[in-house]
Amino acid sequence: MIELLYRMGLRLRREAVIAFPAYYHNAVLYRVRFNFVSPEDEGRLRAYRRDLADLSLAEASWAFELGCVRDRETGAVVHWQGPELCMPLVGRVADRFADPRYEAIARRTAEAVHVQLDRERFRARLAAQLETEPGSDPSAGA
Image (tube, rainbow, N blue to C red):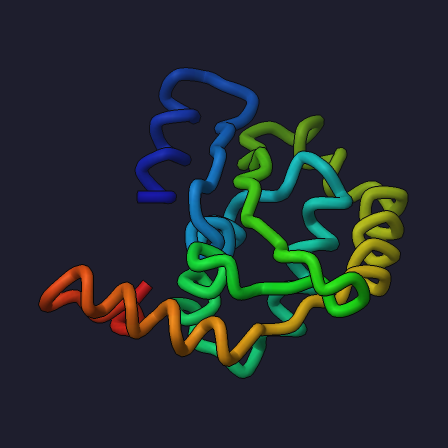
C-alpha cells in the first residue's frame, strides 16, 4: 500500500503524500517511508515504541484503542491522536526531516515522554472485547 501511494504521488507529480494514521499500528508501519510533520509527534512515537517494546505491535495498538496506555508521571490515559505523516517525494520536502533541529526536538520529546501499560485494565478490556466480538482475536496480526 505504501509503495502504491509513493508511485501515485510521483505519477501525479506531487511533492509529498500526507497520511493521518487512525491507529497506532498504522503509524508504526507507515514510518518505513513517512515522517511525522511535527518533530514532537516523532518523539512521542519513539517514546511509545520504547516504553511498549515488550508488547507486539497488535497488542500495543489494542492497548491504545482500549484506553490502557497511561502517562507514567500523571497516570492519565494516553490516547492515540493520529498525527499527520508526510512521505517526501522531492528533496526540498525531505530536507525538512533531515534538519538537525527536527531531530533535536524529536529526541528531547522522546526523552521527556514516558508511558506504561495498565496491565490489569488491558487484560479486562481485552477479554471484554473478545467476548463482544465472537471469533475475533485482537492479538493476531496488526
